[in-house]
Length: 315
Image (cartoon, rainbow, N blue to C red; front, side, top):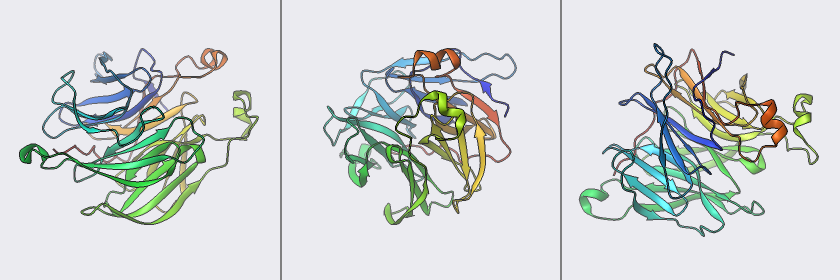
């Protein structure tokens, strides 16, 4: 696969990439680095100048907002910034204990509601949840956004995505190596008929990076994206691969990635046929970082089938 290195400086834990169609820019976050990044790739000059915005808390996920700027799910709540680098206004306080839990993977649905999962940081109990934040009309009505817990029983929330026809919702628990799928009703946001989309093998207790080529462990599901045909792409953290599943659950392709810890894909470019991936260098061994000096960088490659465009936050 012809991956191109997009960035020149690595992130600790790159996540939550999206392509802004009006700005023609790629956005993503570095969670422990407490930053939002953006860049406008330039094929003609090869320039990859990254703009960075320092944040006061860890950003779990971000999304573009219809009125401008971003919505950001940080540790202590959901915030709005009306423009890049602007003042952060808390619109929803964290509905959980922020000493043990923070927001993680998330994105907006087709109706403009932000869905954000959490990670329970002790990772010894299934206390992570998936929240839906509905802020539609709140600016004009001077009301607070509506917050609902939609699912629980997880440790590390990841893999959130919807089918192109908005009738299916995907969500993963990275710790338990499982991706679920629900029937989804867009207007009411009701999730029904949960079933396992794919259960991956557990990580062997004594696994080390030296065993990565032995096939004993293929990583665990992290962030995801969906293309216009309804195929579900999932980054396999520690697996050095991206998997492409049909909506039926059939594995269509295994795409090797440049570094071991791939975190999340997204589709971008003017035609949405550029596949971007974020990666991680955080908490990796010195030996692994020597062997994989590009860990933490953003990469891209061209694909034949375009992805779905990003959904905007409505408030």
